[in-house]
Length: 91
Image (cartoon, one colour):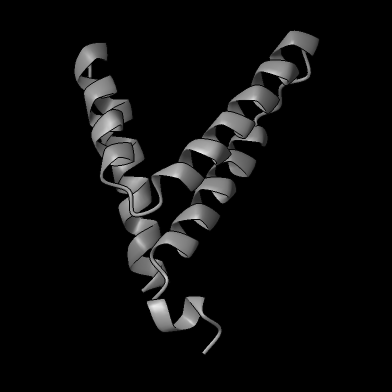
């Protein structure tokens, strides 16, 4: 299950990044977020990551490895969102 969800996440990101028209790319991202099982958690994590990335950019401290932290954060949200209900309760 985890591997399948990770493949879906990367596929969604790749799809929206490869779209040439910015309006279509934004619509694809909005659709992904709108259909996410945990939209509030995803929005919180994306907001925090964006604030962190903006702070790095303001200080000129960006690194190539920052994208891995962003992807790991989104992956964690997806693991939580797509975990079977019994597992979420600790059963």
